[in-house]
Amino acid sequence: MFIIFPIAGVGKRLQPFTFSKPKAFIKVAGQRLIDHILNKLKQTFPEGTEILFIVGYMQRQISDYLESKYSDYFTLYFKEQKPQGYIEDTPYFSGLGDAILLAKEDAKDKDIFICLSDRLPLEDYSSLLLDFHKNTCDGIINTKKVDNPQFYGITKIDEEGYIKDIVEKPTQFISNLAVSGAYLFSKDISSHLFGLLEEQSKIELENGEEHQFTPIIETLIKEGKRIRAHIMKKEILDFGRPDSLLKGNKYLLSEVKLKNPLLDDNQEENKIEDCKIIPPVCVGENATIKDSVIGPNVSIGDNVFLNKCILKNSVLGDGVHLEKIISKSSIFGDYCTLQGLIKKGVTIGDSAYVHTYQTRESYNDK
Image 1 (cartoon, rainbow, N blue to C red):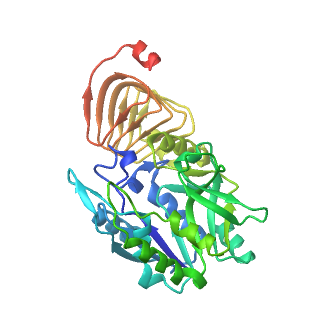
Image 2 (image 1 turned 180 degrees about the vertical axis):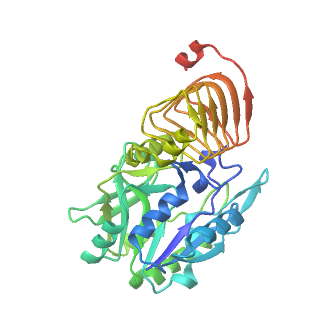
């Protein structure tokens, strides 16, 4: 099995957090998103499995990190997806289809597993592989029922679980079974799949268009290829938007043991003083928390300082410094500093500095 992992995009929907790091480097429940995903891959695939990362935005940051952490288990390769252009120094790319095409020479005539960086299943991918090997099919796509199908690629399946139709972000209801971040294709059709991607790449793009992957799958289905929908039993977390990131953080924290070793260590070292911790809460290394109420569903990064804060349902990056903050459903970027704020739904980017005071009414009204 050859794994293709596209990770070139900027992550516009997660700005301002992606101005200084790739979206897969956002930390939730004690780990970066990329770590959560690769740990699932380690649970599924044997040591030595080949992974090709398609990089672009902040590629050096990505490759250095992955080489240092995962080269002892996986065989890692990297290829660059060149930007299609720039808007105010921020690159934009020609789409997922062109990203996957870059794996053509490495992955043709092999079973290929394509994994996206903004979807995380709470279970590993073993059941998907088992479904693939148990059935006579040319490919299989991970799916999950969703409440807002207009945001996803949506599949319509027959009684046997094979996909009859697939539509990218439909404007009218087709079904609620969404493509959810993982695809597996047999070596019998992989060369043909790359051929279709190559034909699509020759189509000229304009006005922000992209070469998507969904039309390629649609073509394979119309040609009679048997593509199954694998419906995951557990939740598949979507980290593509701030609201879904907070929801994903809550689900991941629910898997964390109530006794957090780092939390216990900090309390023993007197770094957590006069506080009420309402689990689940994940606290990073070298955190100092004083005179605060934290939780439930709060993820705290490394080297964080909190004083006189009340926080719940929130994500705090590394190096955050908060004093006299009352907030919920908020995301605080790495190394941001805030003082004197009472407000819910705060979204503060990396290295921001805010010093203000608001009334309690502003917290309740918004």
